[in-house]
Image 1 (cartoon, rainbow, N blue to C red):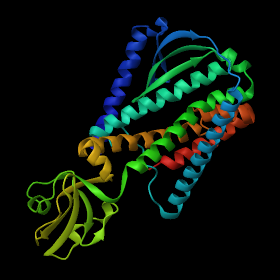
Image 2: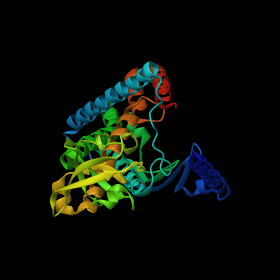
Image 3: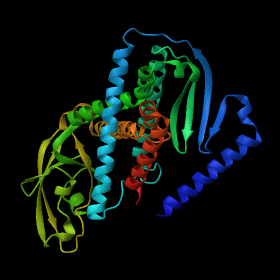
Length: 353
């Protein structure tokens, strides 16, 4: 908890300094740097890309809109299931991922890379659909939203308002559509990269029973006492075992195949002494090596998590999302605000601790 407080204080100090320097140096006058809502810093470059209408744009708009509504349905289902589940069981809310707090180490690098790719493609598709619908793109750039690096595209708002409603919805839906498509592609790739049996050993404690009896880093534990291991939860918790006892552990080891190990557990042992991760498939480990296979697996996992989360979050009818504007186009300004407010309450109920 102390780390969360320290991180929050440092983040607050950073944004206070950004706001002070932004005003003191009058950066708004440069036309290159903008600060919005105190925590959105934008660096942009004017481009003036001319529109390039496409004959097939109606088909693309329809596909984009369909993927948007699929994302909206998934958000609504997930939010309602979460809130109703909390009411029934009294469980805590959805875990909010915070870089530097509950995303650390190499996972932080994979997370930031995934966010940058997902956000850049999100904005790029907005720009492409705008141009294909006859709407000029005025500028592009990068932004920092609180702690997240994102891409930025600015279209000609007057031309956007003059585009047909189908075109406007197509442009607004494009970012959500590409994120959902990337999420499904990452999910399929992750499924192909995953091993249905086994968990990967990513570390072994020196002096532990596992260390003393031959378990090595990057072994894949496939069974314990003859029982297949399909997840980390299938590994026995040593402190709950009647001791002394013996664990018969089968591991898959690159270059050796299946290796059978006998690990005695003494009365004073509290844990077996291994750090575990979901296992990439053995063919991937054999092809790339264990370290590279694990990196590819975890990066693909973060691409799935980030793109799926961005698709659902941006599809949600909230005041600051693409979904909020789409619902405004369909329901009108008055009812759009009502729906946005209701969705905001649902979102808050979902993430409250």
